[in-house]
Length: 252
Image 1 (spheres, rainbow, N blue to C red):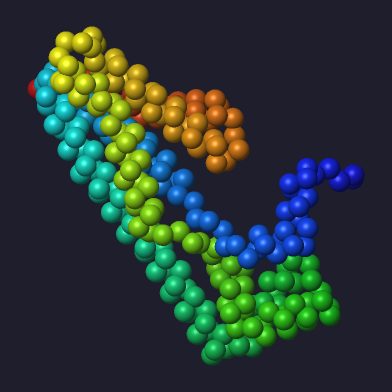
Image 2: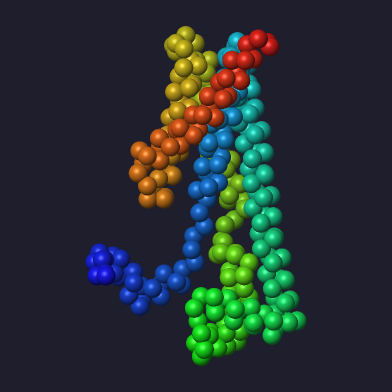
């Protein structure tokens, strides 16, 4: 198979100096999952409030009050939950590392055998396998790192639980405000907007599509396809919220 020609920038990245420079720089943590999680949930839950209150015909003031309370309370709750969940995962990783360090100290022969079997499964045999085991077990840090990734499945993780929580909160509040924005504007400038609920539904769709297109920039996908996919999935959740709001008409 003939190699595919690489462009100049890609070629420079794979020279010895380019590879050395890239490997010296630790991978940057991604908070895209936290942002998407907060944005979708913020938009859906706020639209659920709008749909529920509008469906029950309780008035725009109630929509604004409950919507604002939802944005701040649920947004903060989600951020705290994400923070605690992320920190728990970090603590779990630290506990697993301490366990591996203890195993290496107490049963080094057994841990070395694990390294041997791991790399034998990758196709190393004979002297090559002996050399791999010797090199890895000669450095305690490399040994434990290898066990963490190869045996326990922990990849590199440099994420910060506080930043993850902040990404969730900001996305929840900013995108979640869109379904509420038209009612706030109508309260400030009364009578200028006809059918505010229809506008709210439209802004909800805009929020879903925007999240999808932003996500596409980071995962090298078509912005239109990603936007429509997120709109379809989020739209199903919003439709469910609308259906519940319509049912509430008979309760209020």
